Length: 323
Image (cartoon, rainbow, N blue to C red; front, top):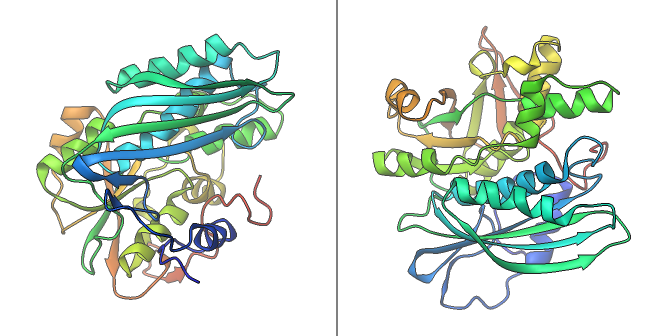
């Protein structure tokens, strides 16, 4: 039995479609599976995000405090994707003896406080390894932004610059140390909570997602949810300066598929975003990277106008070759 969850392609998302099912949904659940978070009655928004050692991070790369900060930032980014204001955080942690749990908690509390949320509970367990952190976040919004509002003719935008976190991972995996900028992008990402709320206040955003799995994959989720095709313009992609050590092809791959930028990808009517006002308010770039059309899938178009489908999306926990 299908579950009606319109996610992009990939083994991980095929598995999600199968396991979610079509069970009874309580009347208090306004938006169920298939978006960045669930929306309950009275504007409550809830999401959960798990961070697993040697899957999402390595302890050799980060301090315990940074591990906690990064885990909570990823979960809070899901609230940003729905334009929700964070209220509180619950944390479950299974930690080996060598981990400083208080330092992990300090990182979680720091990023939660940065967006006005507090840590209100959770669970703690000893683990023989690995370190596992599961963060539940709750927020509020009167206008949750979903993934399914894109229409042909719309423009596709992203905040910030892409690829720095993936550049850090690629560098560590090569046995080298990343630049300070790349390392910071991976260790201390910024949940774009205020930026998302601003877009709602402008009344310009039609659909939105946070970039956790890479622009290619997450744009695929927007397209699948909305029943449209998304074309990304290669020369418009805002590549991070941290990609300077990589050639053009590898830089594009990291920006499109590397993941964990935790920027926002959103869709608006044409020319609806005041780029300069957004930059002056937040000190963050916002870039139009593509368009929406009838059809399906995610496509790339180059400067000569050659348009071709993206052969592979973003990170997929069950995908061949992902690590």
